[in-house]
Image (cartoon, rainbow, N blue to C red; front, side, top):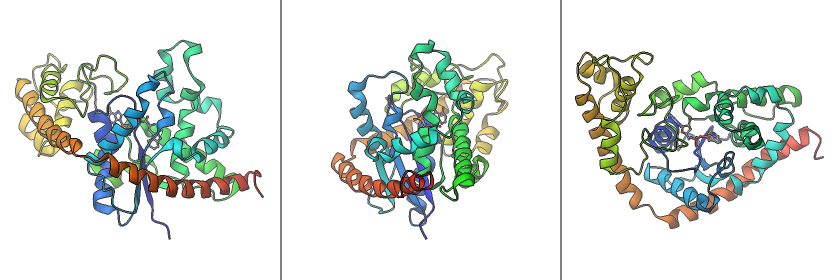
Length: 343
Ligand code: TYM
């Protein structure tokens, strides 16, 4: 029997930040390093997702390769036969299945997606692309083509994952068992443990998530930031005027975000971090500890990044993309037959 598939993708827009790293990348790297014998691991660059909103197309290629380097520097074992890296656009079945799924998806369903509402709210009607609108359908195709059961993502993508389950169940009930339905979000959290379903907040405005589309970059820590930049951003992180450290997402989102970051990057778990800092009347020591922990972590990561071999990546891409085309085409053919496009 085929192994269960764990799959995730990280867009190549801008450098990856610590939210992408913790929410999307680290959980799958943990699985790839600890459980690659029991699962198939698919870590891909959703390059077709990159221009749902306008981008500089001249830097897309560089961004794609940089993402792949980050995957390897984070610890992805390229030499394992069941670990795969690939670029979405090199597997044309993604686009083909998207069109088919589009025709079984409601306009209302897509219009309700929070991410669409957030992103489109900032644009005039003519600048909202149809691609931005039906982007969750492409994401569903990314997942369903490989029969992925587990999809580690940050909290912002949970709604898209639920949609993937809905569309898979819809087609399965109409046409027979076409797709593996990915596990429900709750089960995903249980499977991946603490790093799943995260929402790391912007340091300058902790009421919103850390996001690479934030132009100022002031509240965003990129994986390639220098120690000085990290310290500056953490030390000037927005907190509050309550002058007492407490873990309270609603009343003290900035301080709570810092406690979370310390638990994720430092050596203590959240319970220990809370025990040490809650009740303190100054925020300075907490900020210094967070900055130290992130600087130490990123310094190690950046050393690994500088040693990554592009040749190893390109070789692995070639093998993986061949294999992924085979797997994806097999699913696509099943769907094409079921809906009457093929004998
Ligand atoms: P993307 O590229 O915007 O983000 C990559 C991953 O980072 C997570 N993330 C966060 N996690 C915690 N806190 C944050 N502040 C934060 N910001 C981002 C995202 O949830 C994601 O896991 N649509 C996806 C890419 C994609 C995909 C897929 C993922 C395309 N096809 C199939 C899984 C399966 C996206 O735009 O993620």
